[in-house]
Image 1 (cartoon, rainbow, N blue to C red):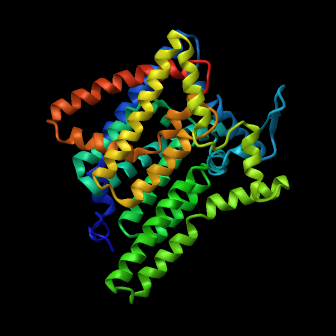
Image 2: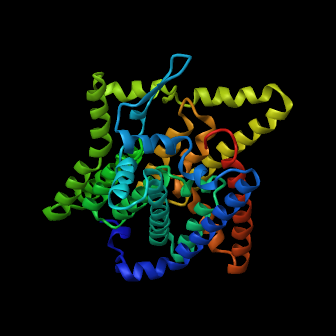
Image 3: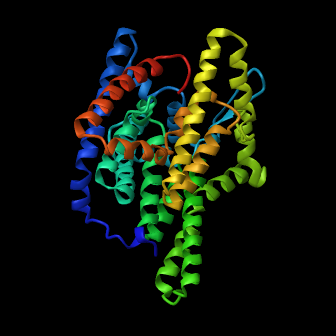
Length: 389
């Protein structure tokens, strides 16, 4: 057991009261973003609700919910976009909502996103509060809310659902609730491919706990050890189960899912394609500014991670963040979506949350309020654009 594990967790009612300022602030920021989107979309004669529920990935999820797997689109260049690329938990929940209510699959996706985003905000608060205290927890949630791509948290996408499962799984690890951590990691693995980051965090933290016990000669209580092993066994079942099912479904074995992603021209190349994409921006002056911005953005992400290391963030947070960041930055396609893919890496925000928590409340509120307005405007502009987020 670590010091973090031995710290008593609050009761459920007490935890909700403690998190209330963070959740209310989060809801206010998201409401501001939705109002800005509604006004901007109306000015362009577009439906804000359609933008949130029936474009890009949201359409693929609703097709899975409605038709099941097997739908694909063959492009003129020979690429095959298969809905097998999309993990099943969100479509399952959309189907459940539609089955028990008059809502459509798209409505169900929007409802799941709204509920999951609040659950994610609470989970982020729980992690940050447990490690650094209440004020840092509130600041971490608000920073996550005001991300430039924060509007995605309200879309019928899987980012909010995944972040909620990941955050609560990490909290369970930090508080020594291994079966809960493994179960939530399993569900995260059914939500997005990056679920392997949660699995890695659970496994590394569990192995580190075994090593500490062995060195301390404290390995006689079989109950906690058995629960830890069970959590480790549960954690990878979601990701592994879906990937193996896709391989069986396509008849291509364990590598079938990789072939599905290749049809979308997506894969892991260590960042080579992204580096080329950034380098090509410097071939002309206007795009060179975008290239410089991309370099600054990547440098900021790396710097925040290193600061987290220096501040001795708990090992599971560092492992989780490292895997999410590596998978996002080193994917070989969809470069415009990288900010969205980084959204679940919320521990990157903890150094900034600590800095804000040290400011006077009025000053930190002014900073966060200003950024929230800018984020709402940018989100409305971004979502009304032609490309997917």
